[in-house]
Length: 349
Image 1 (cartoon, rainbow, N blue to C red):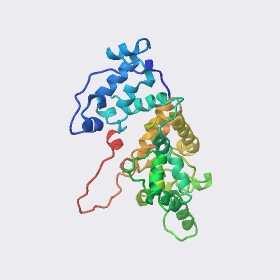
Image 2: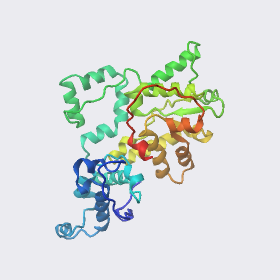
Image 3: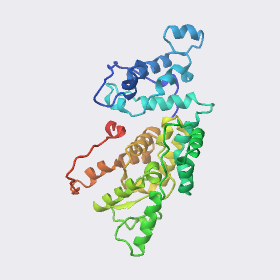
Image 4: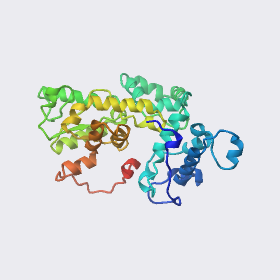
């Protein structure tokens, strides 16, 4: 996944940053500084690729050429406020994907260096959440009670004014497995199918199974969202299967440039879901950040791997899956107004 500065090509025309409409670029709208716009970041990255001679750095900086390559503080400062919304990927006239460039830059910038505490806390949130799920009550005491929560924020590098989300008392996957066992005993009416063995997978008729992706946040923090997704999919006539292996799409890792672990997680997904991928079973996710993450990154990280390309084609957001595979499913109408906050990754996909 690594690349040298000389391998990055940035070309095309600059677009005047917008104050309203569309997605691009939230950091510019907040700061009104050119270096925090898509155009400004693309130009700085272009300058970085031109600065190959490290002689007379001060003079070069005065002339507008960055000679520090992947260790450039100017480029890092510009990319720090990038939210990785990927709005530029679809709205920029030449499709500049600043979020991907940011991940690649940070991967090189911190090579051989210690990262900020927040990078380890948020980038590896799947590990910390999994550990907390064994005793969510105790974990919530440490993250929610006064004084203890301040210590937790200090350790994780979180600002004092921010709140740490509480862990759910039961993960979505635990709920799903217990629900399946109750159904086996005849105490339930749902038809959820667990992801455990080839024999159990065969219980779902061909063409009606769907793999629901249990992303980190819906599994450990907001399981009610994933539970609702199960109910909707089953109401539409599908048999839901859920991985029991501890899989993670690695989405937070890209924000901090932790590409080595992100790639290893993608390989684990390809190995664990190999039977479903080969069987053509579609995968659905209710988190717009998780689904595009392993769909897009699996195909770009392993462009010659057939399983990666197949997984990318078979992955859908929940709404996309229903539109594609259950176009006649009658969704209930709610006679009321609602405020819908669209996810940036959903808008940009």
